[in-house]
Length: 237
Ligand code: PXP
Image (cartoon, rainbow, N blue to C red):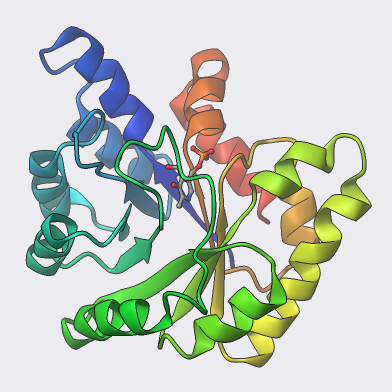
């Protein structure tokens, strides 16, 4: 089974545009689960421009499926996740002012840094995942960081899917096989949508989780949140 974790950052972006509490991020998380999502993902950034640190604490109280927190492991981020203790923390290398995550870790260069952070997470009973591209060296070195899983950065897949899906998927199958052989669990995320998700799942059936935000929330404007989540779940069957 591949779990669908809904990234609700965009809901917070909409709320923050007006001040006040519409839409209610907490209610949306509960409803996503009610509509079938098997996880909730948030990505608090240092400037709290979408999900706020206080949202993360409140979400922990209500999320009954899997709670996944993504982010760069700054001191502030680590303090937050070690006190909230979500099921999973996904470490991303993006600088504080990045618009969105746009690269995976150089796991060779950051091996000892990641090892230290991951050890801290695991000592607190939190599963660790690290965001990586499909470069073999990055997958191989990920093993030595002690991470439980990797999250494959799927933007390069999504960007050429519509013109050449075979070429788009090839490096992902290769990376996923290397990771599987090394005993790493595999998640995936970034720019996945109703068009490209099924082909990813069919080619990497051992995929454990996808986290999807931008497209899912945008599609919900047309189909409604419940329908959209159900449509995504069907792509993963
Ligand atoms: N995974 C990571 C590490 C991310 O940073 C993001 C975006 O916040 C996603 C997955 C979800 O990407 P998208 O919003 O394109 O579905």
